[in-house]
Image (cartoon, rainbow, N blue to C red):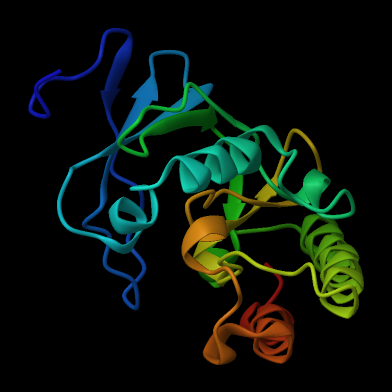
Amino acid sequence: MNNNLNPKGFKKYFPNRNENKKNDVYDFFISADESVIYKKNKNRPSKIKELLESDAAKNDFKGILSGEGITPGLRPHIVNGFDYEEDGSYKSEFIHGFRLDLIANYELTEKLFSDIIIQCQNLLGSLEIAAAEEELFGDWALHNLVYSLKYERIINVDLEGFMTYKPLPKWANFEVILDWVASIEASKSIQ
């Protein structure tokens, strides 16, 4: 497939950019019904490309996509992927909702904002258990976390981050994740 052409049944998708993150690894495509997102590897030099050079790493990534490579307590908080490609491209359900790094930009009712805060606390509880069991890995930065309107919980949509942040770097460890999530409540004034 030519990277300049849209895959059949998909259109180019441009997620809101996080000023602290530069994405140059994947092109994004969304299905016509907006139910599936396709992350197509641009095949540029990247950490994920290096990591996927071995068959063992490819199998690890397939396990992450399916959820089998994720500790059970975190599975509800991570999108499932499918249609793995050898270059690290994959598809997953498109999660409709509110990205946590942009939460202050949304006009939310008091009840919805309260529900999001409760789900943040539920997520932190699951992350704390995984950290205590030394099973916490992945990129849990706020731009990867979406409050799902369908599932009514926080979901991490960055599956490749479970390869590149294994183990967690010190600058993104559990204590830092706690601070990131705690910043949500302070960032939002109720509409």
